[in-house]
Length: 363
Image (cartoon, rainbow, N blue to C red; front, side, top):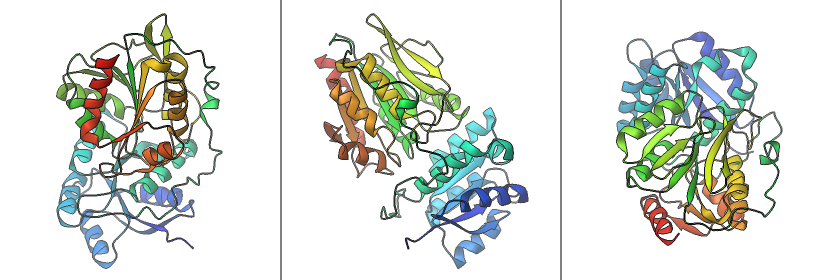
């Protein structure tokens, strides 16, 4: 049998520890090796047995989670998934956690709500499994474990949101739109790519797997760092040169067109490829609406979300790029897109922005 992913839960709430353990152990690939009520107890457990993944609360007695995370990353890097409340302040704190080395985030408010745990349980397990494959600065995690998701629900494709492309995408014009998909490790990868773009860069739409409300704080942070304007997408927002729209957490984002102008549609809907927002939904909509006017970019992340949609974009005439393995925290999503034949070029992270600008110059 394949070795299970061993998880250490660190949270001062006994009810959260109990609920999170039950959610994780419902997956046969995961084993909760222990729980701790604060970082000092956790440090003792780590000395006895090193986990594959840690789930870490932000606010705890004696030492807060961010401080513990920074110490851990300096002394013994282990993939960490942060837990926080569903608040604006919590979102800002989690951005600090990602900068400090956390791999991903889950929401404590959702963990504690047993009556609304179905979709959330799927995401929690997927986040933890993705984290187990993350490449950290001093630690290389094996990708030998299966990347397939073993959630309790049927894995839906983009057919659940819109039918396949009809082959009648808009003809080539002078304006292009860039569609980007990312997951685990994507928050920092997107920051690096967007910081390298000038104020007149092509219009861009992004799906980054993350919880609701977190995307607003993420977009605000990027907007303060980048020359391009970055915002969380709202239904009907136009796609404009020098502007970046990020799909809101827990909502799908589709690219649509009226004449030669693009705008986004933000919708509810089922989990697609076990995600909401889904990269496959965005990419399929781009294949239908933009065709050869689009560029697709798939970046670091676990699983196969975006692989089908990227192939559809390529078949519709779009130019498609994948982040390479060496610069990806997790090479799952790019690897799947490459394997399905949807990728024209594979590039390291620090060359993707330049490629976007080269395509803009050619259009």
